[in-house]
Length: 86
Image 1: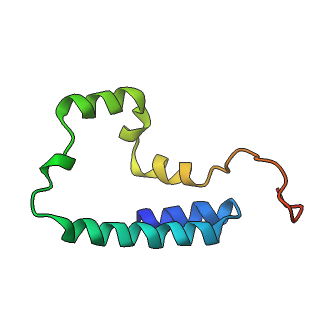
Image 2: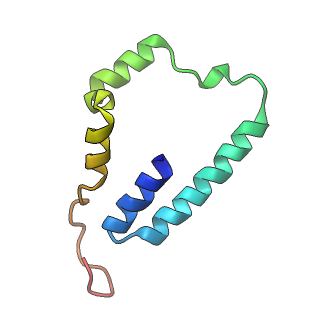
C-alpha cells in the first residue's frame, strides 16, 4: 500500500518514473536486509527515540484517511525544467 501511495504521489507531481525507480530500489534494499542477518534488534527504536520522533512529527499519529489525503498534496514549485514544464 505504501508503494502505491508513493507511485501516486510521484505521478501527481510529474515524477512517476523516478517514483518507480525508487520503489524498485526500496524492494532490492528490503530483500537484502531480510537476508542479511538473523539479529535485527539493532534496528529497533527505543521508547525514548519513538517519543522524540512523535514530538517532532505529530502527524505520524494521523488516521489512515488523513495520511492518504496528504499523499495527493502537490510538492512545492521547484522551478521550470529544461523542457519548460514546472
